[in-house]
Image 1 (cartoon, rainbow, N blue to C red):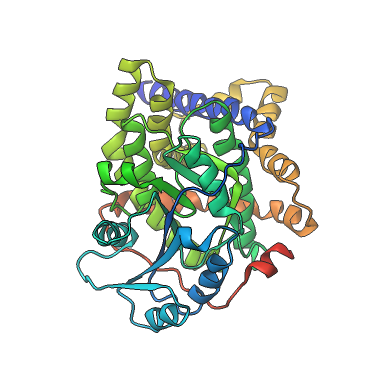
Image 2 (image 1 turned 135 degrees about the vertical axis):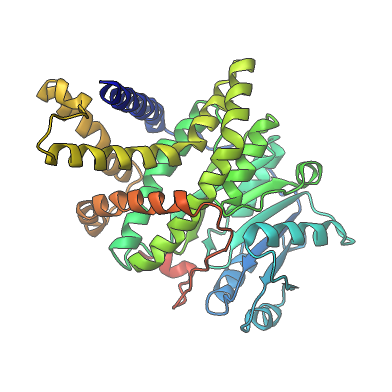
Length: 411
C-alpha cells in the first residue's frame, strides 16, 4: 500500500511539472518583438573556445571577420586550449589572436574561459563586453550589432538564438535541430515574453564586462553555461534572449558521439542541480520571486528525466509479474479522451514549433518519426550520468568537414 501511494505521488509530481512547462510554452506562440536599433557603440572581445579544431576554426574566423560591425570595435581571441594540432597556427594565419593554454589538470571549456578572462583583464585595451563562441560555430553577420542593441538597452547577459549548422547530416543532427527549434520558441521565447530569466546555451553568449569582473566566471562544471545562468539568477541578473541573433552550432552526426556529448551535459546538470536547487528555491519562496523558483525547477529537470525513466521501468516490470500490481498508472484512471489530449500536448509542440519557425524542408518533418528514438535515448544516458556525475573529464566532439555560412543559409 505504501509503495502504491508513493508511486502515485511521484507520478502526480511529474505531471504537475509537465503541466507547468506546457503552460509556459503557450507564451512562446506570441510573436517576439524586435529590439530598437542603436548605433555601434560597444566594443567587444570575441572569445572562441577551441581544442584541436584545425578543421573548422578557420571557417569561423573568416565568418567573424566579415561581420557588419566596425572592425575597430571588436577583436577576436581564440583560446587554443591544450591543442596538439595546428589550431594555433591556423588562427595566426588568419590574423587574429591565438591564446595558447596548457593545463593537464584543469581541462575543459569552463577552465579555459576562466583563464582567458584573467588574461583579457590584464591587457592594455579593455572592452565593454565579451562574446563567446565555440570553434565549430557560424554566425549571422549582424550578431554584434544585435548584441550592441541589447547592451545599450541595459541588458547585462544575452543569449543568441541557437540553431543547427548541419541538420541534414543524419537523423541525429535532425533530432538536435528539431529540439533546438522547439526550445528556442517554446522554452526560451516563452520565458522572455514573461520577463523571466532565459538560460545560456554554451555559445552565442554576450556578457557585460563590468558584470563579469564583479562576478568572476566561476563556472567550471561540465555545463558551465547552466552554472553561470544560475549564478546570475541568484544575483537578480536575468539573462535575456535575442531572437534575431542567430548562431549555428555543429552537432554530432553519429549516435555514439551524440551519446557522449549528452552524457557530459547530464553529468554536469546533476552537479548544478545539487548546488543550486535548494538555494534558488528557498530564495524564490522567501522573496516571492517566480523567476528564481522557475530556475530552481529547471535545475532539477535532469532528476525529472531520471525519475521518469525509473518509474517507466518499474511499471513495465510490475505489469510483467504475475503478482498483484504495486504501481498504478494515474493515466489508467483517466478517460480515454483525456489521455489522448495529454499525448497530443506532449507530441504536437514539436511540429508546431517547426511550423511557426518556418521550417520548409519536408525531410525535417519526416524526421519527426525518428525523433522519439532520440528523446527516449535520454533516459539511459541520464541514468548512467547519475552514477558517474562526479566525472569531470571533458569529452571533445571531433569534426570531420568544413561548413561555411553561405552553405548554411542556402539550406
